[in-house]
Amino acid sequence: MPPPDTTPSTEEAVTRVIAFFETLAPADVAALGRLYAAEARFKDPFNEVQGLPAIRHIFEHMFVALDQPRFVVTGRVVQGQQCFLTWEFLFAFRNFHKGVAQTVRGASHLVFDDQGLVTLHRDYWDAAEELYEKLPVVGGLMRWLKKRANS
Image 1 (cartoon, helix red, strand yellow):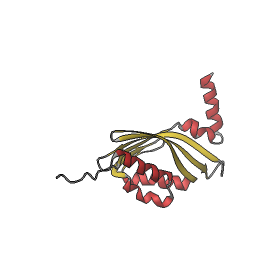
Image 2 (cartoon, one colour):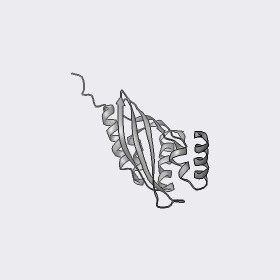
Image 3 (cartoon, helix red, strand yellow):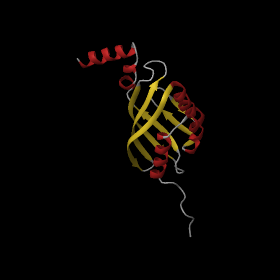
Image 4 (cartoon, helix red, strand yellow):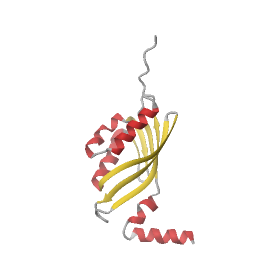
């Protein structure tokens, strides 16, 4: 008789990732190795890194730069060993608009290995609309450029 399959399904791995990110706190960043493969790749509009230490650094910096950052996953599609998540990222800036709640809406493409660990995490969101337009000075310029482009 063959041994029982102990490899987690992609659905189980996705559920674990969602639960982790929706409850993420600064102390949890050290545990990213439970979700990510050692040489995982991560890319978003500001970063492109490979390896667990570099990915940890991105999330550590998030807690330094922002007040009360948290993720709310609003949708998921799982196919094979990959998934696509839609989410809202809620936070407040520490330096400007201090204390004013902000929301960035985006999506993540995750690819899992046979052990259910993330090997690729790619975030998609519009930095201009979701972030730059909310900043003093730069925001005014971005809104003006958007208006000019649409006229």
